[in-house]
Every structure is written in structure tokens, then in C-alpha cells.
Amino acid sequence: MTGLSVSPDIQARLLDVKDMDTEMIVARRRISELSNEVDALESDDAYHQLVREAENAADRVDDVTREKEHVTADIEVAHARIVRDREREAASSDTKELVALESEISSLERRIEMLKEQQGEILERWKAATADRERLMTERDAFHERRSETQAKLRSEIDAKTTRIAAVESDRARLIAELPVELVELYERQRERYGVGASLLTRGISTASGVELTPYQLDVVKNADPFEVLMCPDSNAILIRTAESGL
Image (cartoon, rainbow, N blue to C red; front, side, top):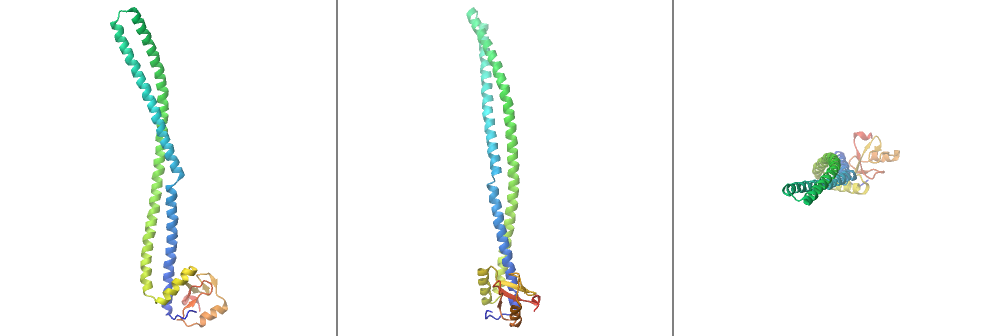
């Protein structure tokens, strides 16, 4: 017993307040879970591993590309020297110079053949490295897209629940303003202390605790004035009596 006297209909409206409080608790808990999921996706090791692998593959392509360009440049230089030597050869009548030029041309041609072999091997490695880079970039981008879609859905749900909480808080404030101050203060105090502020008594059971009242406790409730504000002996919440209480 509390010493408060409030119309049963007014007391029953605390159940609406309780439902609102429960809904907001569940929504806030869900927002916390969703936020953790968003954070987990931000630090997803699998995604960051894909990013690193794609970057490493791109670096390998760059390395092989430089090799390919270097060999190509060497071939071009060798060809240019052969052209120069052929021009000198055509303009010379000196036997020794002609022999030396022909020897150099032969050496350059062999070098070009060797370089072309290297070029072919490098080209194969370049193709493989490029294909690997493209594959990993595709996997990375697809993973990122899926992750972004998931994050967007999570954030959308967070926004929806945040909006819902704001609406419930507004409705709750309007309802609270219509109730007696002493009753609201008692409800808030019990809710803060015990986790729930009001409990419906239905068929002898307090819904807040799920415990059936003893015969003695039920007698006390039955004999109490309907206007008297009672407390649940198990949950310490305000005990709400309605037609469902079966008294």
C-alpha cells in the first residue's frame, strides 16, 4: 500500500506508459546491436585482407610493367644501333671497320633475340599479374558493394528505430502530463529501482514477475479499495487491477 488514491481507470493508463517504456528499451537495445554490426563491418578483416591483396597485385603489375618497358627500351636501343651500324657499313670501305661492324651487328641481333625471349616471358607474367589484379579488384569491389548495402540497411533500421523512439517519447510525455504527479513519480521511482513501474494483475498472476500471488496476498488485493494504489509484492511495481484480474 502507498497511501495514494487514484481512479482505477487512471491507474490502468500506467500500463500504456509501461508498454511505451518497454518498446523504447527494446528499440534502444536493437539500435546498440545494429551499431555494433555496422562497426564490425567497418573493421571487417576479410575486406581489409582483400584490399591488401588487390594493392599487392597492383604493385606486382607495376613491377612487371617496368620490366617490360625496360626490355622494350633495350630492344629499341639495339635496333637503333644496328641501323646506325648498317649506315656506317654502307658508307665504309675499310675492311677492318666492316668486319667490326658486322661482328657488332651479329652481337646485337643475338642480344635482340635474347631480349625478345625475355620480353615474351615477361609478357606472360604481366598478363598473369594483370588478370590476378583484375580478379582481386573485382572481388574487393563486390565485397565492398555487398558490405555497403548491408551497412545501408542497418543504418536505415537504426534511423527508423530512432524515429520511432522519438515518437514514443512524445506520446509518453503527453500521457504522463495527463496523470497525477504523485502517481507518475511513484511509477518512475519503482521503474528506476526495479526495472518496471507497473504490473497488470491477471488471473492472480503479476505480469511483471510472472509470479502468482499467494491466497493471502490476493485477499489483501480483493479487500483493498479500488482507488487505492497497491504495490506488487514480488516485482515492487504498481499493481494494476482491471477486469482481467479476476478479482
